[in-house]
Image (cartoon, rainbow, N blue to C red; front, side, top):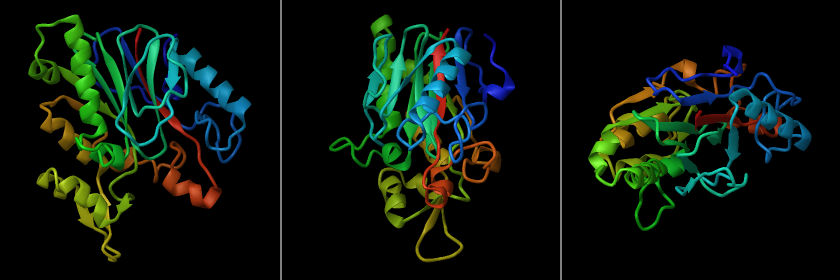
Length: 277
């Protein structure tokens, strides 16, 4: 079934034939306010039957099985197959199987999709600032993008033992989805320090908050680009930090935890999916 524009955002990137991707918006589902209407999160106080209906609708739209993880802002990568249960604890996933959609839920965090030129592997990562910086990944300090890329390399090498890491990473295609934008993401100095201590160039993704108080405004998509580029990945598409990608300010299109959780008590979740057809 072909995807329509109203089904969500279809990434504009040079993915190979047979690799499909979709980022859902808040439109097109059955949930009532404040989850209106295409909420896919089953942990946000929405009616379970409506969440189930929305998830079933997503599966019908993409003609694949979306696997919904229990995300904990960590760095674990789960390799998916047809039997992987929903609720598996991980913040990234990878698959070489057709008909299984790597799925990440977000409502301000950055979704990151991966594939290669041959379309043999697909992956998705949930990159909030903690997972992106790898603050809980002791003792390695590697973030969720590094662990996802490492898992991707292993998957390619299982199919082609002659493939070295540099060749695999240079061949990666990456798409960054909508997230909280650089004019809305207020953070403390500890967040800036978590990135700058491992990469001084990360300081350029932070500006002092105009209101003062020692706070900063952070550019989450720029931080992700830096981490990807440090691994030799250059073909990066999607979110460039401009307002159209901001989940906080684009209230008619996107759910936002930071915008809605205090005001409305909760908010829904969108999904970034990538799969082999």
